[in-house]
Amino acid sequence: MEKIEPMTLFGYEKLQAEVKYLKEVRRPQIVKDIEDALEHGDLKENAEYHAAKENQRTIDGRLQDLADIIGCAKIVNPSELEHARISFGSTVVMTDMDTDEEVTYTIVGGCESNPDMGLISFGSPLAKQLLGREEGDEVKVQLPGGKKEFEIDEVKYQEIVFECH
Image (tube, rainbow, N blue to C red; front, side):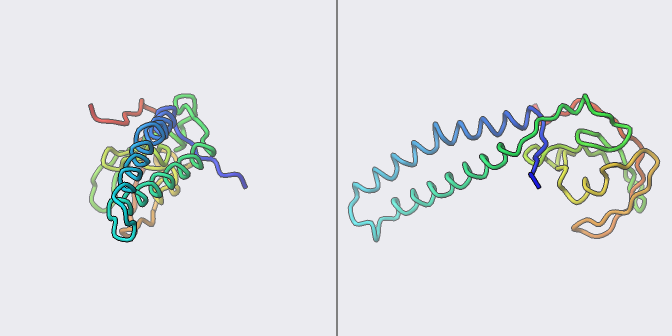
């Protein structure tokens, strides 16, 4: 089965910018660092060389990860989706049935998630258990911290704010 990674245009452009930065800024700097370290001679005890090579492996690994994600990317405009039921891009207002605390989450792509801002990945345990639900539903969810029970108060689309300004 083909893996699809839904994301907004914001997330896609963020990944593209990271690739560009790594290829055009970070990787050339690492290559220069390796060349400079080679001038210091003996590679067995050359900490600068080994650190630079490790940085190069890390960057190459991240570039491969980004290529895989971008290769599976499907840009979705959440404003064009139906939000009667919870789906990608939905903002969900829920009440924790144990504490009466109201929480609000927006379901976004994995590369866009920021739980501190209420942005949760569509692949997260909570989002997976919310998808397809609607206002008025009570849902018991198994989270890494244990079981929680929520009542879904509102499902809507609102413009997604990805970064604090």
